[in-house]
Length: 83
Image 1 (cartoon, rainbow, N blue to C red):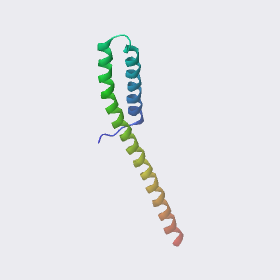
Image 2 (tube, rainbow, N blue to C red):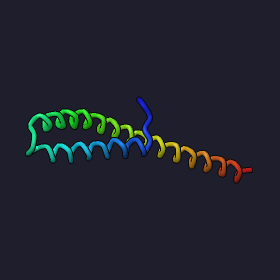
Image 3 (cartoon, rainbow, N blue to C red):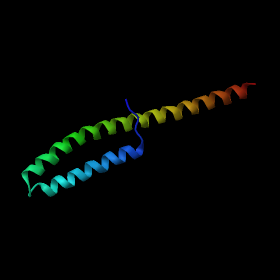
Image 4 (cartoon, one colour):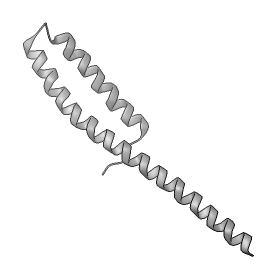
C-alpha cells in the first residue's frame, strides 16, 4: 500500500469537495456536464475512500510506535531501578 501524508489526504478531500460543488452547479444547467462530474466524482470517491483507509492505518501505526517506545522506556527504567 502507498503511504499518505496529511497533506495528500487534505488534497484529496478538497478536490472531492470541489467536484461536488461543480456537480451541484451543473445539475440544473447541462446534462452532459452533470454526467461528466458524476463520473469524476465517483472516481474521486474511490480515491477518497482509499485515502481515508490509508490515513487510518497511518494513525494506527503512529500510535503503535508511540506505545512501543513508551513500553521500551518503562522496561529500561525498571531494569535500571533493579540495579
